[in-house]
Image (cartoon, rainbow, N blue to C red; front, side, top):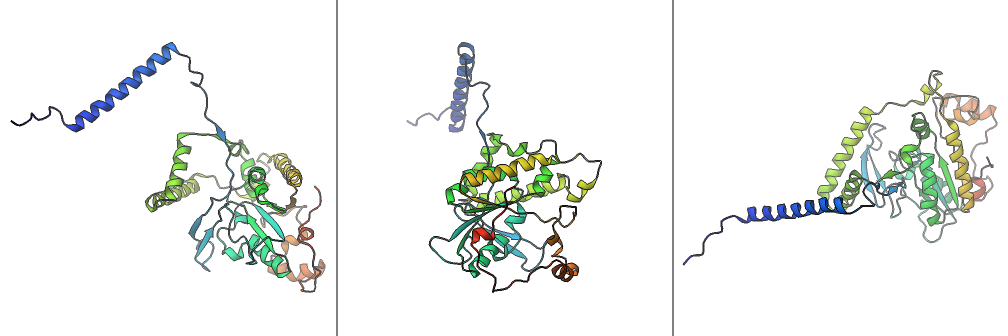
Length: 326
């Protein structure tokens, strides 16, 4: 005799089980709200501050035709600590004579530049030619500010035994300080569902090409959306007297803090001026016009500039990068 067919299918039974579990959880929630005081009911999640460096082990190939066609694409790779490669331009192994960190925004990260031509890497190459084996730790990232650097130095650089830290910030800080919120967006955020989703996407994309393609598509869409919605900030417009002045004191306070913090960790700070060819004022140094071919010959002779020579004395790398106390 055949067994009777089940009255309801397995799908219905599974749905009924899930509904029963949800109903039990709902009843439990109602009872607890009545009889128990939840000390965490209105508590916010943890706040966190990002160390704004590149992700470790990045291997990104980008189109740079907006900048030039030689080459049309460029490769950005980072090491296991998130430093932009190459970190050892000399090609040597073992302990370096000096470890130099570079901190800044896109003009220091040089993402659109061939790896060997990025100026932090060129610094290591030039020191190598003069007999110094330098390890170059380029911790810069596009959009970085001096406020971000104050977080990067104690939370990453001090672990890598840095001897000299070169910092170059200006433009991104001007853009942030020109807005009412100033540096607040970089002062930490609360963990959210969106944050957890971003982190999950980053982890999945490092293990799956499908998720990697989804992440690349989302990143490109976000960049396009940001480009369309973001107000263009031109440094030349700051000459408009109708605009409120940028609170330069916020920048100065962080710059002095960086110098003190670096020295307290035994790191020699170097403050590098970011070149802005659209602005000239009484503080513009004489050498700012050296990049202009029409002024190069006059500038070199009238200001007593000494040409490069292999007979120059061999200073220590610290002496070559030394700065005066602010």
